[in-house]
Image (cartoon, rainbow, N blue to C red; front, side, top):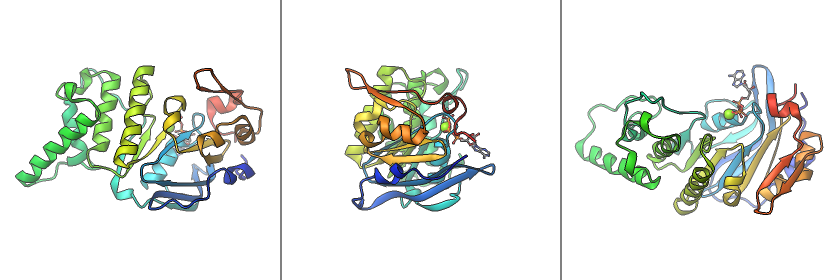
Length: 282
Ligand SMILES: Nc1ncnc2c1ncn2[C@@H]1O[C@H](COP(=O)(O)OP(=O)(O)OP(=O)(O)O)[C@@H](O)[C@H]1O
Ligand SMILES: [Mg+2]
């Protein structure tokens, strides 16, 4: 597999310095099981900026999120995440079976009590408990989940579960939200609603949002940066710079066409079959 950077990759990101960045990657690369997943990723994200990580299955999007979390080391380059102590994280593919009895509000509370390990803190002061109750209620209200937060989460719909899990990620007031396919399994109206909610959290609360997505369209109008991974390489930049026929054809090393529909949606045509099914070519 080739891992050489394509010239276009470094030229697309605007050079203006970002004040007070929440994360910075410079020439970052990651290896798993002895192979390079991606390399030469340059990205700087500031407070209140919205970033999408795009690319085919298996290309290393979730691994990039884990690298930002500090759970997977970079094999080369620099990875700096000043906001690491204040991250809200939504992992990929989480759903609860219908029989799960734990209430939505308790799932949100785990974001506070359990921190990373799900273990309640002993001997917590009563005033602090009250403040935590308020914060949990606020987080639930902020995602519009108050109406069903007291139901067993297994009885909530997929979209309702997503909102409650987003509330869990928000409950500690993070500076950086890392969301791995939060729109997965939502219908189109719920995708739009969730995208609008994330856009609001980003702009109004100054939270930096980095999310993995398979379809860029629901979030297109909110985006400041795109990281597009394919073929062991990466292109970063503004969406209008990255999601173009020219840039994606260079990235894939094959003709790829980006079409814009009458309603402004982007359609990517001609992605090589091997990249759709099994990720980067080896
Ligand atoms: N710890 C590991 N050891 C070996 N291989 C791994 C490890 N973690 C991930 N991989 C492999 O690395 C590749 C990238 O995985 P990753 O989960 O980051 O892909 P992805 O882009 O998020 O894919 P998807 O769109 O399917 O979620 C996959 O081929 C996966 O099997
Ligand atoms: Mg993934």
